[in-house]
Length: 327
Ligand SMILES: NC(=O)c1ccc[n+]([C@@H]2O[C@H](COP(=O)([O-])OP(=O)(O)OC[C@H]3O[C@@H](n4cnc5c(N)ncnc54)[C@H](OP(=O)(O)O)[C@@H]3O)[C@@H](O)[C@H]2O)c1
Image (cartoon, rainbow, N blue to C red; front, side, top):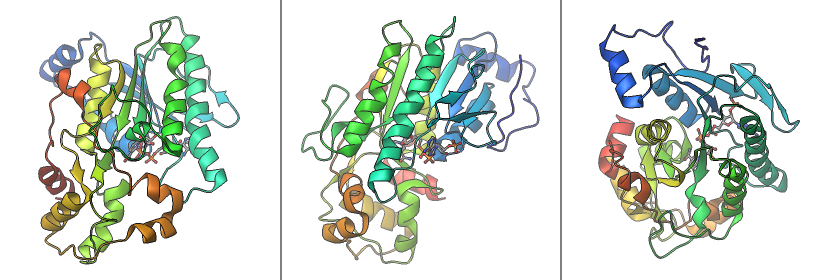
C-alpha cells in the first residue's frame, strides 16, 4: 500500500506503529484489517490541517487534493479538471474545500463561495460514480442551511431557511444527492462556529477582547451554535468509522449560547472586561450582508444525530472549550 505524503501538515517520516498495541486498537476502532485511504480536499485549511494530522495519527493513509502544488493531487475546479486517478484505492472522500465565507460579499465573491462548493462537489461525485468500488462521501456543510434567524431550537429534522448561505448549503448538499440513489454512504456535517485560536471567528475576536475592548454584538440575544475544533475533527473521524452515520448531521456542541453569554465567558477565560458592545448597525456597515448572515444570525442548533449515535464529546461546555482552545 502506498503511503502518500501529506505535505500540508507536520507528519511523521513514517508511521510509527508499536507492533501490536496501536495497530490492534486501530483495527478494532476502525473495524478494518488494512489501513484505509482517505482523500481530503481543503486539507490546507483550518479544519483540514487538524483532521489530516488526526487521521494519520490513527493510521490512515491520507491523500490531499488541492488547488496548489502543495497537495498530493491538484485540481482546477473552475476548469472542471481533476486527475482521473485521484480516487484509485480511496475508501472515503472528505470534502472540505470552498472559498472562504469570511470576507465582504461582492457579487464576484458570492459566485466564488457558491461555485467553489457546488462545482467541486459535482467533480467529485462524477469521479465517485465512475469507480467500481465507490468510496464513502463525507462533506462539510453549514448550519446556515437552517437560515438566519430562528426563535426555536433546530435539529436535523428542521427545514431549510432564508438567506444566501442557506441557498449555498442547499445547492452544496444537493450536488451530492446523485450518490445516494446508487447507495453510496453520504454524510453532510452541518457545522457551527468552529472554535480555534488559529483561525475562524474566535481568532478574529481575540485581539479586541485581549485589549479589553471586546463586547457583545448587537443586543447579544442572538444564539450562537459552536463546536470546538477537536470535537469537529472527532466528528469527521466518527463519520468515517461508523457506517450508521448517514445524511445530514449537525456538528455543533450540545449547548448553544447567546452572544451575551459567549462574550461574558470569553472575557472570563481571558480575564478581560467585555463592556464595549458592537452595534448591529456598525456590523452591517462594516461587513454588509456577510455580517447579517453570520455574526448577527440567531440559530440555536442541536446535535441530535451525533448524540443518538453515541458520539462522545470532549468539550461539550463552552467555558471548558474556550479554556482548552486558548491555553
Ligand atoms: N470554520 C468554520 O467555522 C466553519 C463553519 C461552518 C462550515 N465550515 C465549512 O467547513 C469547510 C472547512 O472549513 P475551514 O475553516 O477549514 O475552511 P478554510 O480554512 O477556509 O479552508 C478551506 C480550503 O478550501 C480550499 N479553497 C479555498 N478557496 C477555494 C476555492 N475558491 N476553490 C476551491 N477550493 C478552495 C483551500 O484549500 P487548497 O488551497 O488546498 O485548495 C482552503 O484551505 C469549509 O467548506 C467551510 O465552509 C467551516
